[in-house]
Image 1 (spheres, rainbow, N blue to C red):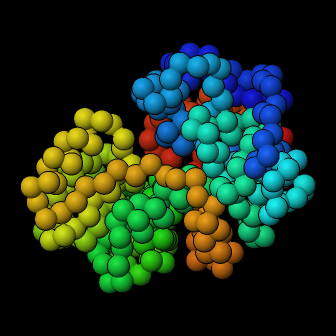
Image 2 (cartoon, rainbow, N blue to C red):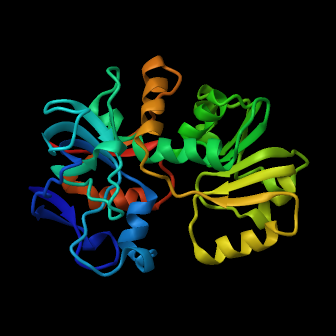
Length: 315
């Protein structure tokens, strides 16, 4: 099969497009003919070697955490899916593997693609939507009427987070983004929108029950004064020094600090699918690239200005 792969850590220039072995199907897995995938910040952080303590030095590595396509084969223990089904999900082997013509999904982490989504739209969903849902519902514990702030509300995770905060019952949702994306964030359901270049949410008088930093640009230390009593801060930045500092700082307050690494959970993805099917959630795509141009997609993502998701189309 053709795939994107790299044999050493480094810049986007280490990415190669070429033949790699088709993955071997296990009893509880489905083999997916990938039609669309995506680029998430975790992909280029892994490629750069930022997380090498977790990802190790076994090469080659195939990046990609979002799979959308058709079932090409099923393992002997699979009961929910059959060949030809439209499915999507996050690979749960910890190394990615989605930026290829074929990828594996364990049956428990896969879900059916909603009828009203194209493969390209579906390829934008799993990691970002699961991150937003688990950050707000599980770590942020959003309750009916809560005041919620989404930092980076126009990014891949942020676009889902604004919508999911409302779906979970938040009373007021505030989003931060650039001036050119403020109208979009309002359209997604935000009650208040702040231009981050002119307004620092950590330094004003507003207080929130939940602050979700969807872009990993803040910290609990910087954000704690924006939290109400018993407020919850959630970040997507797994940098060890920030995690330790935030946890220590939170230990001396009545507030909490959390870091979210999305779990490959099929039941959560099925819930997201229902919301997508009902129109409660919509998918925002910034740009699409062919799989062979994944290096360019990485470079674009690393600039940090994407509105919504960056999708890879697999022919």
